[in-house]
Structure formats: C-alpha cells, structure tokens
Length: 150
Image (tube, rainbow, N blue to C red):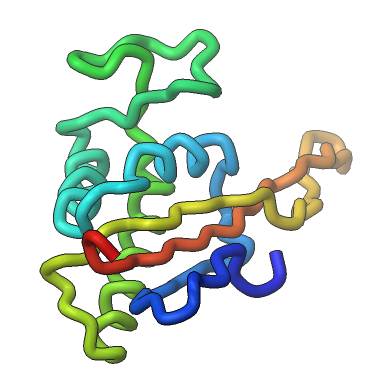
C-alpha cells in the first residue's frame, strides 16, 4: 500500500490519516471499517468507544462463521484491539483537519479502507528445545474525512 488509495476530486477539503502494518487482524479491521464508513465523525468515535467498553457490537457481515449473535446486531463481536487503533487513526485525521482549517463539527468518514499488510514470521519456543513457526498478520488502514455534503 503505497500512498493513499483516495486521490480526491480536485478541490475537495479532506483530511487524511493512515497507519501501516498494524499488528491486528485484517478480517476484523474490514468489519470495523464497514461499520464506520459514512458515519459522522462524532458517531464513529462514540461507536468505537462503545465497542472498547463492550456496550455495542460490530456487525460481522462477511467473516461471521460460528459468530454468536449480539443484541440488535445479529452476528457480531467486540474487536477491542482494532477499535483502539482505528480510534487513534480517527483522532489523527481529526487533528489533521483542524490543522488544515476544516470545521471538525461537520466531518464525515468518506473513505475507510484496509488492506492486508506484510506477514511477520516468528517462532514460538516449545518443549525440549524445539520451536513452532507462526505468522503474525498486519493491516494497513486509511481513513479520509470530508465535510458533509461535499
């Protein structure tokens, strides 16, 4: 993932933020991104804070095999690690908007995209001097905020 996937439409007033190779699940990140895309900035932040506190679940639409149903959502989960990271990226994008002179009260999450990052290879020590190989997945995240109606 080189650069931003969103290139803009000329004179758009947008604020962007991204993170590269975060150590979190790409599948859970995909579901969180679908949940916040199109929401107002304040609503997106409150949703993520509620997920961290386990008050509201993120609906799992695609990766939901053997996923328990949650009240009012259907199949869903509380991906806390992803919610914390995405909340930090949202706050960074909001700070970028303030720096650029954009009114933060009227911002909407226009683009919320994620992609699989590089796989980190590691070994887990086992008994009798052995080791088991395991892979840690990483995720690239991109968020673009724009003014409502723009």
